[in-house]
Length: 309
Image 1 (cartoon, helix red, strand yellow):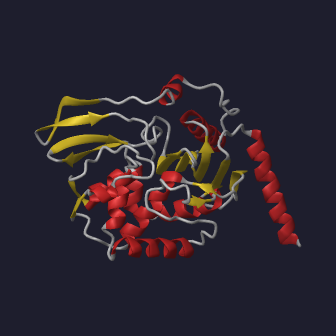
Image 2: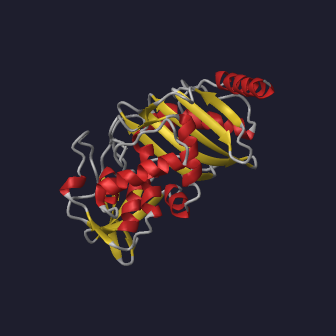
Image 3: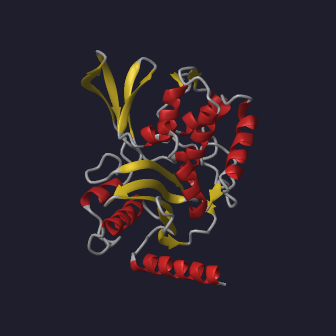
């Protein structure tokens, strides 16, 4: 009886905290890593599509297989997205070391890269699916179903509560934390150094100490985000699902960080900063050959454009 009472009190407190902040995301869960204390909760048990948050699971399963990360992987037609017809900056026929394919899947959220990782898993795609299901069970993610490695399928579904478990597990992989907290990197694509950026604009931003990051977007899932942050000496994991726009997702994250820091009141989701407004202002595609070099070679800078990730 006492345990039930305490659980009810915790849920009441967390629900009150959620109501105190104008979250635009449909599901929110923020947990203090060291204590497990729930800082914010909103619809944390609601099952919903999770888009490219899936790629954290894909990465863990691939790394668990201990494959040769220097082995070249050729991107094949089989890796092209035929479900959403999303764009990719990785051409069919490109041969890239598995380490860089993982980098593209996590940092730049490239769907062809994630598909190639699953296709080249030991035993093939069926073996990959088996490993994913075993990992889900081992982590106690009882409300999670992942049918494919990219997150493009709306049948890849989970809850904010389950995704905190996934984020906690992923944070124990140094390769995943390194990649997902890198603002950008140069990757050799068919003899040219191409600059790829993190899909999370907060990575590398002033005042943000991020230990893990993954964004996601499909029409069904809305804008999603997993982040581990450190603020005011505290470590916290946040999961945001189904925000209506990138600006809403990032302002939710800002409100959470301000709460952890103990700053004054929340930022209204209707008061977009110029930078956030620009990020939600529509697709822009630009590829230009820059004058800077890496190892004596010119490189191509590719700016972000709208895609499912």
